[in-house]
Image (spheres, rainbow, N blue to C red):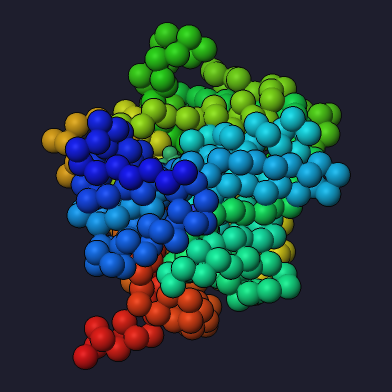
Length: 451
Ligand SMILES: Cc1cc2nc3c(=O)[nH]c(=O)nc-3n(C[C@H](O)[C@H](O)[C@H](O)COP(=O)(O)OP(=O)(O)OC[C@H]3O[C@@H](n4cnc5c(N)ncnc54)[C@H](O)[C@@H]3O)c2cc1C
């Protein structure tokens, strides 16, 4: 049943908060929608009262695109159902589910699909932006496993997009963001995964960085598809599994998610283990536990960016590690993720995403506590991007960046796919009601802006 929350509601502050504490917007109304009929009612009210619309699921948009000031937020979080058809290896997931909820239900059957690396991220927002996760080199991005979406369009139509109907909308939903309607349900193909996999983190003091990073680069670049991994520069958290002398100290770490057979995984991991990590938490563990291993609490301040690379040279690694050593905040993680694997073999036309063959993503992920440190942390991300620019392809994965303007949105898709998205947007949302996202502007809006 539909619930409305305005500024006077006791739950208002909790309802309007996003993961990134830098976002402090005050919508006039939050419509907590429990199905397509509620979404239609909310959109109708926004139209009548001339309110701008934002759509919110997991609330992890780093730029705060899932809320607004003085507008109406369509909050899909009440739509929480997860139905697993184990024999058909399919899942139907409500638009308000998080990856933690989806993984838990699918793992009861030893199944999963590629999902985000943090359990509290929304299935909707992550998948609509592509969906990068530990399983991607074996099973593709989340959107590559998307079989159908059900959405309510700006004019209140309930549409199911799948292989047989509204195929253009299904294609656009595989990376084109929430531009085309409010997604109320998603269907995915599932794969046997775990429930036990070989996973965890190894780490070395940061002064071992160059040796570890080069070995990691060559290891990950030639690894079988069953390996999901990433290099991370971070500070040792104050946890009991971190030796006291490394807590708070800069480290270079390698995350591991191996879903192939155990013996091959052990042999593969040995290559990194031979570098004698001071922290070695890699071992058999439940896939669902790995999926929440990196969870941070909400309420911290965030600013990130990202770029694609075809190769990651020694010089690029030096620039990466140098920036890692200059992180202004001990909470910041500086990430290098290998793509490759099946990602480069999937038909590039099957989704709007550009540069499917890119082999690396660099991802400076600034996290800090106090507003006085905003400038220093934002500058750190921007300076790294500048120093890193000679090594990048010019393409970008939009889920890993905030609001960096139209050029970056175009760069994420490439000219031809961007034009195809504009045509689909112009058909399903000609007035750009859904503008709170990495926005594809419909044709009429282009003309209005130019005029
Ligand atoms: C800590 C953290 C870790 C992350 N890790 C990963 C990762 O491993 N892989 C990865 O690919 N990304 C990752 N991301 C990025 C994340 O995928 C994007 O920020 C994504 O948009 C978040 O989706 P959400 O539903 O949680 O967010 P929201 O803030 O609710 O929404 C984000 C965007 O999606 C739109 N949207 C959300 N739900 C709907 C819907 N039902 N219908 C239409 N539009 C909708 C919103 O309007 C908004 O534009 C991470 C983000 C954070 C904060």
